[in-house]
Image (cartoon, rainbow, N blue to C red):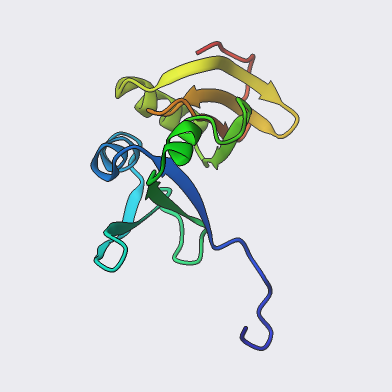
Length: 144
């Protein structure tokens, strides 16, 4: 570790059925950035890394990992036992909620204003739950 640097969460793993279908959802629908997609011949897998749109180069990234065993297959979509797994912060909740709705994202909990901001929960293509969180808007909460 460099002198003066502090530990930080660099990457998390998301177990998926297929790299390309996962990329179609996260990059194609949600607008995430593809950071890397390289083949690892010694393990016959791809190293696929994405990050939320507009996140800086030092932001935490997501490694899309194709399930390689039957046990790993059982974890797809339920890595947290049905709890919200990921918290996606935005500077413009209304913009991103509308954009995700327009591309067919499934909202499973309506928009609410919480002490930490405006939030709504959506399900990804595998069933994992995500919180979209942004600044609280002026005026009453609206359902989505």
